[in-house]
Image (cartoon, rainbow, N blue to C red; front, side):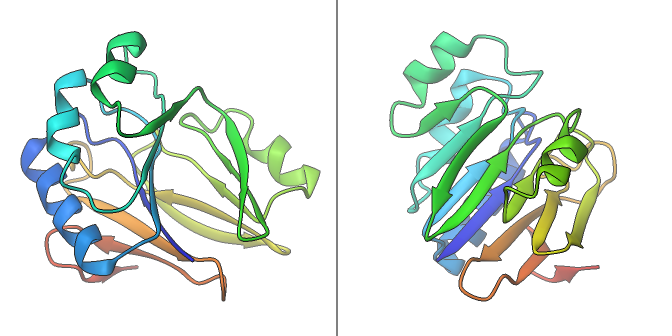
Amino acid sequence: MKIGFISDTHEQTKNIAAAVERFNNMSPDLVIHLGDICSPIMADHFKPLKAPLKIIFGNNDGDKAYLRKRFDYAELFTTPHEFSLNGKKIICMHEPEFLEVFLKSGEYDLLAYGHTHRKEIRKNGSAAVLNPGEAGGLLTGISSAAMWDTSDGSIFIFDIFSGDELK
């Protein structure tokens, strides 16, 4: 199973369109947005995504009721949100405030977060930690997203405009 991750789009419609197109070309089984979509009207920009969409609310996602209404085709969750897919236990959050506590628990195969706008992939025993960076490109100038393959545990972060893998 391939899962796409995106975070911190911050209403950057051109970047959202590029990310949706890139994900559609990569054919993930699911895409998870790790927070900070910001505006409910962004639902129209994510609608062309072919994969199911899960959204974790971020600190800049203000009107959660209207976000739920506009994103009626997606599943929306408060942060943190844990679930299992293909026998893998995953926890997703926007802010990484308790990331290390969750990591030390040893309960998760993948811990994914956003908020910092900084890309991160690291392994800790059998667990992986992922921050796909910022799709909005506002702080770092790099618009990125990520893909995780649950079958072999591989993770990579890519530039949403070029598709190139980022280090």
